[in-house]
Amino acid sequence: MRPDAAAGRSGYRTVPHTADLRVEAWAPTREECLAQAVRGVCASFLDVTGAVGTHPRDIVLRADRDEDVLVLLLEEVVYRLDTQGEVPVDVELAPVDGGVRAVLHMAEAGSLPVTGAAPKAVTLHDLAMVRGPQGWTCSVTLDV
Image (cartoon, rainbow, N blue to C red; front, side):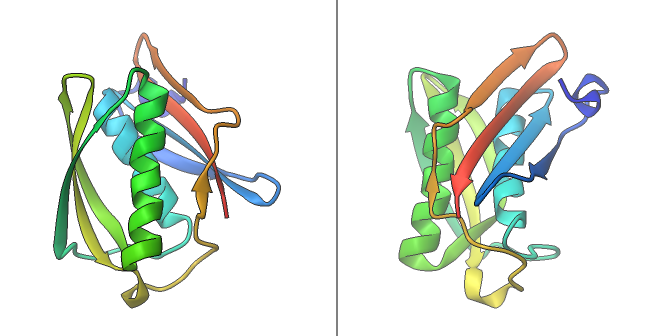
């Protein structure tokens, strides 16, 4: 568990990983941990500071395991980037039976400064989403 999660805080960090992107996130709740993972992925390749989402996308993602919800959510981010050239600059998540409801506030990716390589796919390598005594942590690797 990250020390920040133990203090009731949320956040993310990218971790060096050979030819890939690895993101770790933490938060007091499952939904905020998922949201932090999205923020970490997006901030790894674009400067989203001060960006305003102008295209809300409302989706429901269901899966049997929390890890699979994380994968589905990040696959949606990659899909929207690849097919529509947009990226979430803010995300709101709420629990639903068997998953989450996500409102992704999208901005045109081309309007934001590039800071790194864009993700191409979510991998299952060392995927984790864990609830601990003081909050949630997750880690995920993406191909870039």
